[in-house]
Image 1 (cartoon, rainbow, N blue to C red):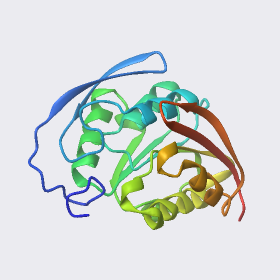
Image 2: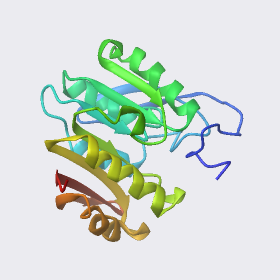
Image 3: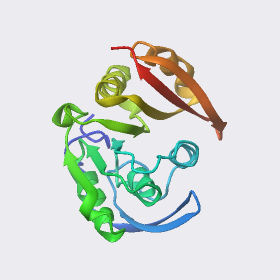
Length: 201
């Protein structure tokens, strides 16, 4: 795991690049780097999630495992609410913070280096968006999603994307531990997008 993007400190040298992100009718230029997830382009799963699970006006949105911040930045253009960008990867969080500034979201965004949601356990989120680090292992993924259930308001939503070939259906079933409903809202390109509502607690 030391060389994985789900690591606190990437071991590969930095080589920053510009990424053109097109989603939800937006065209954004973001900065990315080596050592973060899908650093050269917006991956198909993240694009599908952004298109299918959009924030409401004024929603507090959490980009959980934000990478360079594409999901949160897109959401920030669609809502006037506050934004939280969270990632264990320090390089990813630094990139997300830079992209927040580039896109004019500084006044309502918080970027934090943390493993999951424990550092913001008192947050009251309307929407959590997550392309979970499947290769980090099931235990890590489930811990992250359980944390999302704890910070969502009663009417809140968790949007998750996963590859069908990497156990998306199993993941949706396991999410039922913490959510009253888990619904498939989109399929495409080998991915499935789920929306979970109604924390069981």
